[in-house]
Length: 397
Ligand code: SF4
Picture 1 (cartoon, rainbow, N blue to C red):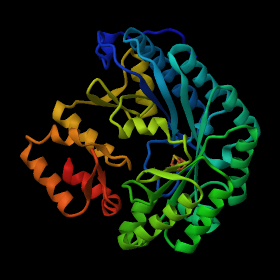
Picture 2: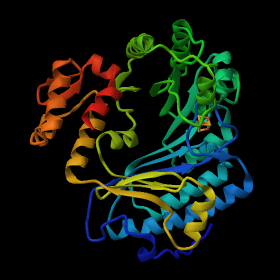
Picture 3: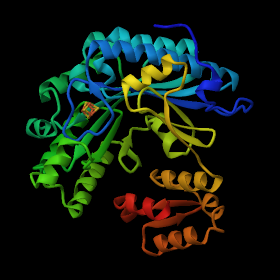
């Protein structure tokens, strides 16, 4: 790893307004490597290759060093770290441990900092889980997706059901008590009974958190190509609510609370990092394609390991695009993201936008059409609103 910091704020741009002293921050770190690409996945990633990994790790060291200096100047503490991808556990255990050593030695982490690592279940071994625990990782987010072998094959996932089950069990036995399982519904050919079995098998693993996502069609994926050729039929939107209701019923009976449209947690286990996104709080992204929201600006890194490494080597931050949000845009976004949470948003946030006539009209219509409701001093999505949350967002933005 490279200890030298050769980035100059002038060359690199100044994401942080230097004199401001602001509240805490979340850090997202993108590890863009996978052993193969799943058929539904559109994230920026490259296939696992040792030379590229070394190039990435050296560049990440430089990026971390630069931001560590900036955060020290603005006296920020970090309260959540989320290492996602890609598959972070495609790195060797020691490589991932080094990344955490850099984070803990260079940033001021809060005492109860939540540190999450995303993993594919089959990549979890006792040795890997142990290394992550030693590195200070407090939470695992496992891309399980399905417990049905045919569905796993249809999604293009690596690993068998048995390997996936064993990976999660091994991690729990090693000492991970905060484990999320990501599940997908609406897989081609999936029946509601199969979805119920996947939910039951997930619950048997006793996770603390479960995320249930409807399969979505993303450009650039194998599913997208199949769909264009007419070789893939997606779930009928009318059937989606049936899958959602099954998830709600089974997870709530097992003691989980739905706190966001796609997320359920046992008491005290909501994902603090993701809550930052929905509550409009700030986060800093590092690694190729990582996105940030800091000091009223959104900015994103280049989606290329080569470009990322070259720019950092040349003393520049690898930012590809940056947008400064006007005050009213920040307020609108804060409402739209906040509505994804079951707790909703304070009603005074909405009243603050009442001078914007177009926005006020859309908002009133959504209330009349039973997508939104006011409960005490908060605004929330109704059951219908949760089902059509993306439509509500589009009408409000
Ligand atoms: S393992 Fe995760 S990040 Fe990698 S291709 Fe599959 S879904 Fe995408």
